[in-house]
Every structure is written in C-alpha cells, then in structure tokens.
Length: 100
Image 1 (cartoon, rainbow, N blue to C red):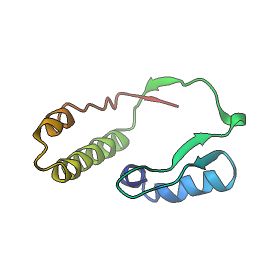
Image 2 (tube, rainbow, N blue to C red; image 1 turned 90 degrees about the horizontal axis):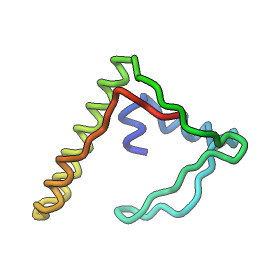
Image 3 (tube, rainbow, N blue to C red; image 1 turned 60 degrees about the vertical axis):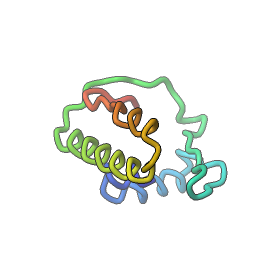
Image 4 (tube, rainbow, N blue to C red; image 1 turned 90 degrees about the vertical axis):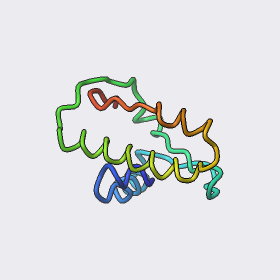
C-alpha cells in the first residue's frame, strides 16, 4: 500500500474502490513487519498480461522516486545486515515497460 501511495496520489483510495466494486479481492491477514494482504483480480477480470512501453514521463519519474525512497527506507531498517543491503542496491525496476 505504501508503494501505491507513493506512485499514485490517493492510490490507496483507488485500490479500496476496486475492492469495493469487486474487481480486486483481498485475502490473508496483515501482520506488521511480517506479512501483508494479498491482492488478486477476481476471476472475471483475470487475463493475460500485456506488455507495452510506458510513455508518461511523469509516471516514470514517480516510479523512480518511489523506488529510491523505499530503497533508502529499507536500507535503514537493515542496518547491520550488510549482506542484505548489497542485494537491495542491485534491485532494478525497468520503467520503460509495464504489464497490465
């Protein structure tokens, strides 16, 4: 949810509305610092993923900014675990394509 909020203004509200109108279903139990809810499309809306180039410079910048901020926050929480931080720094998001 934090990632969605950083990418899309009020993105959490969009997600809640999609759950409310039964496009997305939420399952599981969220436990802080252990596991989160699982989100899936309901069977009526499931389809194959389509891949296409992302042309919105504004969205690309938001994705990069959110990725950088989350990487910094996660690196702080992993202080003292340098073997994990080196892999975190290798994390790569390719904003040129997006799957729907």
